[in-house]
Length: 211
Image 1: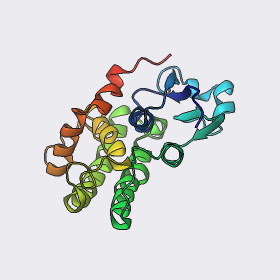
Image 2 (image 1 turned 90 degrees about the vertical axis):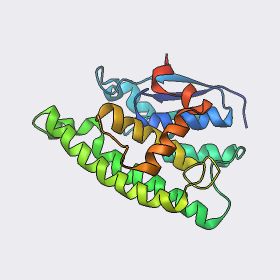
Image 3 (image 1 turned 135 degrees about the vertical axis):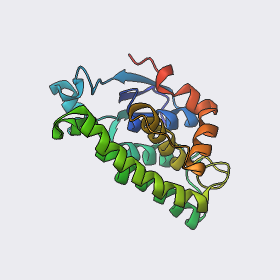
């Protein structure tokens, strides 16, 4: 594919942005990250960004002369166009296990803790309380799934999209929602291991300085 530098429009503490950031790092794709502050400045709501992403969400990736939105669609595009190193297992059952984990996080947990939902609650504490309930239920599911599929990574011994979804989600649970995940032994063990890997160190929110 083309050698031009990709542009990631993201927010460093966004779990969706972190998934994509990690994939770009693993694939060795040169990129710059443009800050879209979805918390204080609300810059995702401006007209300029709406022209980039009609949904006015992060992340958006400009790559190969195209703009791709939605984190999982972005991950799949990167996987399809830059297949090595692969982020998808070869075997059908392992691929399905990966998708079970991704969907549990992406569809089951993450949407109900978006910052845009704060306005639905009368105060911050009620918002956090509901978020913890949703995350806790999701972590129960993940623990059960991972007990069947995990090896060195979420699915066997291959780093996959499931790991790219897991790390930002658990980080979000422990930091933003102040949850203790130690009771989820498999989840916690994998999370701590993955945090020590170069990919997740390099793309960790604390190490990101977007333009």
